[in-house]
Length: 335
Image (cartoon, rainbow, N blue to C red; front, top):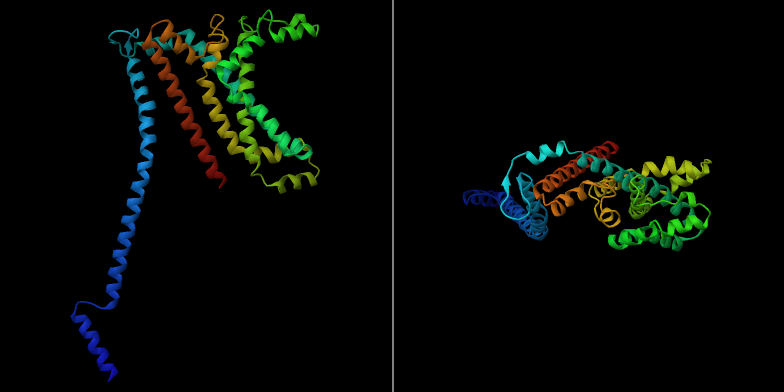
């Protein structure tokens, strides 16, 4: 009797419009739809947290850059109504020897703030990590790392004033030290001589910048497998060979990040030039950012200063995009 009853039950279920299995499917489908709706709602709530940052980016960066770009197409003293001149400021920029000279000085700053600190930071970070950490302990490593990083947290104005005292021609500490050592012939007007001013500013910028690569590289060394160094040491490799064949290849991502950030910082350097030399003597230390400032606030040529700022901003954006693409491609190849 059980078989006929089962058959009747199935027929009744079909007559009622379906079986248990389709009902479960409909329930699961409904449940899946609810899950997707829940995820969409969650993503929407996450987007709300991005609004403050997006609004700040819009107000602080996008709008001022758009206004600056608009001003660059005008002849304006900063007061009154701007007069539209089209590409006249950019045409003037191409033939302005002072601008190209400031750009060449900016390339020197790239060497002082990106290339030299990166090379020195690599060697110092490896020495602190491998040598000082091994023989003196982590406490001394932390103290020395903080000392190297200190210039990064000092106000630029304070550091610039102190260095202007050190490099003063008459009573500066550097010339006094050279005189005490019997090296009077090496005394210079470090910031007032056009032949020495740029190199003096570059030396100060190396001092300011070296702490950033050092900290980044020491952080990167934390993730390097110690077994690699131990294996190289067992094979008879000295410190330099371990540094060259083990440390450098492992720190490629950090090196790329440091070079990108430091190059951007070098292209837009302003504060130290303003405090130490004011772009002088005779434009010997002028850089594009300070050249734009001069045209804005000293020469009252806001349109021309805006054109310089726009070109510099576009250059930095292109450099950042190209560097990030190259880094992404290198990471994909390594995978």
